Length: 229
Image 1 (cartoon, rainbow, N blue to C red):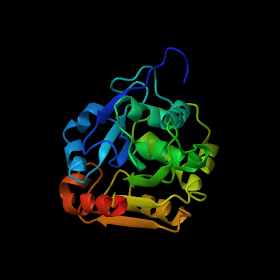
Image 2 (image 1 turned 180 degrees about the horizontal axis):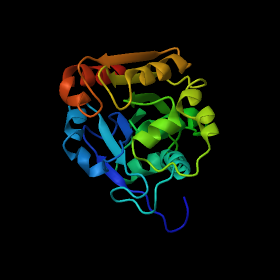
Image 3 (image 1 turned 120 degrees about the vertical axis):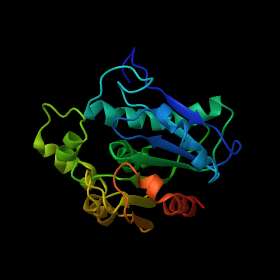
Image 4 (image 1 turned 60 degrees about the vertical axis):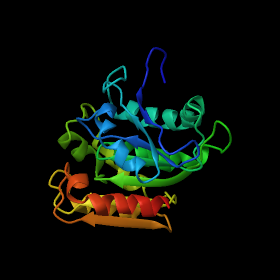
């Protein structure tokens, strides 16, 4: 990360030092502090949560672009062991989860997970969770309101859909069947492209893009708990 740029977030350190943790990248139009009301539901699953703000969001400095969003995600994951240790935490498993726009960050981490050795400061990735994610990157980033000015359409060849093809980390994909912003077919494409031998897709009936947890609370939380257990 460049000098003078700080990327912040919110840590919800529930369930003891060794309980599993989720490194979470939120959607566009959200900030980490919005998860003050949602993180306790993950706490009930026995999971602690670290929610990261992109540049220009919440407590983070700078201006968001696709390139620095991707780069910062990898930097954060490389540092996450030290972040947990500084709070007296040493989760036995660390998962990465991306909601909507956050799927870009989460998939990039899963793609590069092999570059991070285990150890006191290193973190092995236990699994990838994608909520309301997209495979066809450029057009959908634009629909989400994320800045894409100046990007080449060729970028889609190295976007989310293509990046899933070598990913072998166990994967859970959750999507609302009635999502009109990012259609469920996008989640299905991510699922089919994923190379993991252990992968699961959960479609929540009657749920759209922003009411997934509200409409399908039990199915949503149950899928994550089963995945982590």
